[in-house]
Length: 371
Image 1 (cartoon, rainbow, N blue to C red):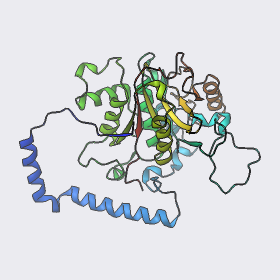
Image 2: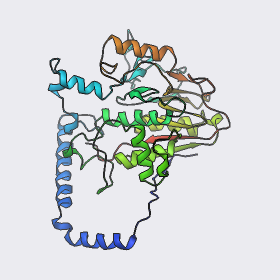
Image 3: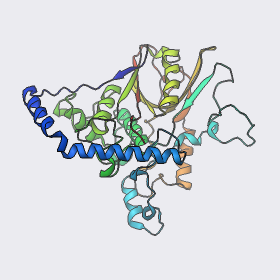
């Protein structure tokens, strides 16, 4: 099994004759159209950002020189009560909760080494064949019950989608301002993109699936499950984010090179969180360790079935402080974020991976133009 590029197919029927006629008219005036001028300006801006990034020796592949990445001195001010209230209304969630795991604690006396070091203690014994990688960049932990939405029993994949979306927002791949909208959105020129960086609500997710023709109108407002493919449709429709899918025929094969090995490769090349869909439970995978010599594999699982505290309202746990630390400690203690063996139990109960169930591992891709 090899990763497959998933290109979401829209089911809307379009009048090809009218579309062709429209394209011909646009081609006749493209040299002077506003979109052409906008594309040219975007290309110039992208080249300038790339040049400045090299001069400043910034890490490649991250959109650090966009207005969405600018530091907001107003909202950072302790005297700005309005801005702080607005942040609470957006429902700040726990940030990078996996870093509260003991394996991510900085070593007390690090040993000097010329080899590249991991940001965590591997959950498997050291071996020349051991390969490990985890999510690169920040994300927010979305789980059951947040934002006054009681989605217990049906919303786990929706929450995983929101966590994936938060990674792109936290790392500035999603433009917060109109001047960023022409670059780094993953393509799809002429497509209408969602301007807000806040993760889409359950209703917005459902409406997006209706819009692409994947679901009937009655789907909106329902409590029906969604899976990895539906999440890929939503990411592409609302943000232009493309995804790859790693199909796994059986849960018992999650520790195979085709699954665990491919996950390590994904985290090394893309660094985005992965949605695990299959069986009756959905998860977010934040990292993987795999040793082909021993056949051992470990998965860093972030479980959206958690129902406890963890942000979601004014004064929530999104900001650093005792409340955030206490919430993160509760998540870790309950095993809602943990390194898991393929045969382990899920934090919510039952097997982590059902042996005879089919799984899709949805791997979002970074936009090609990301400077």
